[in-house]
Image (tube, rainbow, N blue to C red):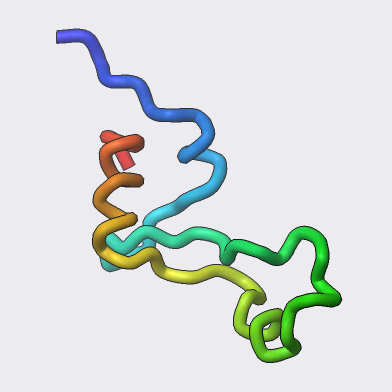
Length: 65
């Protein structure tokens, strides 16, 4: 059997934690930040753990992660 390919875009954007959860960046913090509340910008720092429904999709993109 040939090897499955990993989606390059997912490889660059997501990583797995030690417990197997998928870690990604928080959305909506690239531009138009004057519209966002300070609370939203503060919570959007760093990374976040994806919810199970989204993590299942990302895992299908990266079969060997």
